[in-house]
Length: 119
Image 1 (cartoon, rainbow, N blue to C red):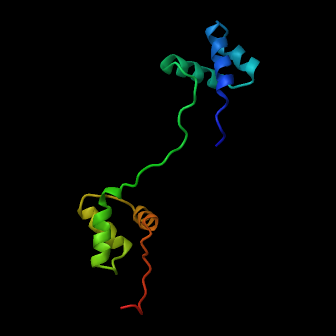
Image 2: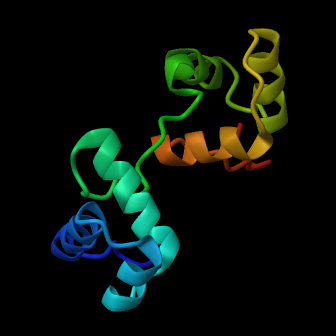
Image 3: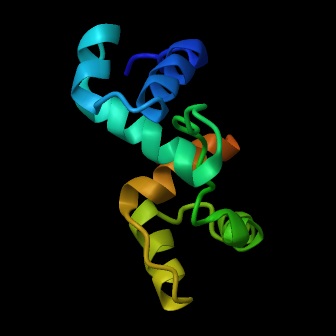
């Protein structure tokens, strides 16, 4: 994904629209898409600013509130599988995918390697 265009350009585009010029002619003059001109104008009318909104971000894990339970269960039953842990979470009303459990354990630094030789 590319970076947003500068606020200076956005302000000049919106100023031209507010001056009475059409969105199409402003788009041609500044070399931007008509949809960008429309969206920037709408953003200015709604918020009073042409600054872009946040791009991306971090989403907390669904399993974060259940962290203590998961660590406790792995301490009690070290041979518990990902599917088993997923089933126990489902019994508690937490519906997650196999991958979500694996990513949570990996992010927490909890190993899930099985070794038959180990007692």
